[in-house]
Amino acid sequence: MTAQPSKTPIVAAQTPVDWAISNEYVDYDLALEVMKRRTLAIREGSARELVWLLEHPPLYTAGTSAKNEDLFNPNGLPVFRTARGGQFTFHGPGQRVAYVMLDLEARGRDIRDFITRLELWLIKALSEFNVKGEIRKDRVGIWVRRSSRGNDVEDKIAAIGLRVSRWVSSHGVALNVDPDLSQFQGIVPCGIRDHGVTSLADLGLPVSMYDVDVALRSSFQQIFGPTRQIDAQSLGLEAGTDQR
Image 1 (cartoon, rainbow, N blue to C red):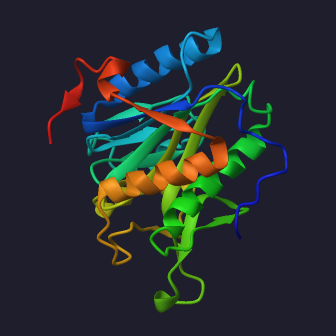
Image 2: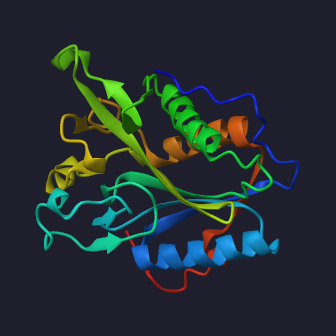
């Protein structure tokens, strides 16, 4: 199934969205603090909307629906409880996380349509690498068919986990480029036990993170409107980043 947004426009008639890319691993606590500051400023009208692309060091996050039994080894990696929707997921090197801080007050106040457009954003980006991403009514995220392994075999290649507070979004999406997929074995990813997890590299596509970033920005602009590149250091990253 392909994501189909409604006809309601979600491109706000305002200045371009800030687009930042961190080249070092960003600690999760720091990312939460940056999102908290930025969403408050967006709500107050003192900052532009922001999409922030980054990688985290290896860790698990638990959304508001996470079940303790879905975490198999609580001492295996750091675990962060978060206010985003969803269940457990893994973040780590080789996975492109995009935190999306948009003003939904100015973009139609339609959360379902916003999620649909996030799905379409990921699907369009994947299509740049000839990967057909699909959505499922009973499963969150973006899925790819693994026909070589059987007619019913599907793996998740991208996850979506959001928080919307007073019509400003935070958290966002995570696309598997070339992460350590074995780390997903420590959890039930997003509460889904019957399907696996894949990446562009696992599909035989040695795509660089730079290429993924270009595809993400191009497809984002088609769906949400123009962006302008900013220096990630301007977000206040004096501490909490690790050099590669």
